[in-house]
Length: 147
Image (cartoon, rainbow, N blue to C red):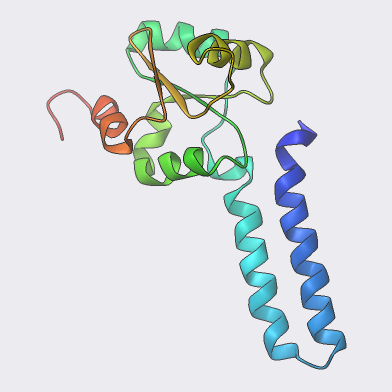
């Protein structure tokens, strides 16, 4: 669990140190933007941006029942963040598995990618797709008869 928060914590700490440096050098006008940018980076690279993760077994079971994709991801992955942001509110319709929190999810990703933990890996109807186009994933998340 702490592994997921390492990068966001580093962004927040780095921003705080830089902002404190600006404050101590007499540049308070520069401290605030630096702090805000680093705080934004910390939030964007945290698990908070992603829908609540479930275990791989549960995600596969739910996907079999409702036909929705399973998205394997990890915090700090720029491509996962890009997919999440491009999906918008539809992201909640997918089943998200954080491979850093779920060893079974990491094993699924390695099996689909020749031993590599390449994410995002999206599984649709039992077939894995590594780093697919967000538009393609969005189409799989659209309700029947829409979009």
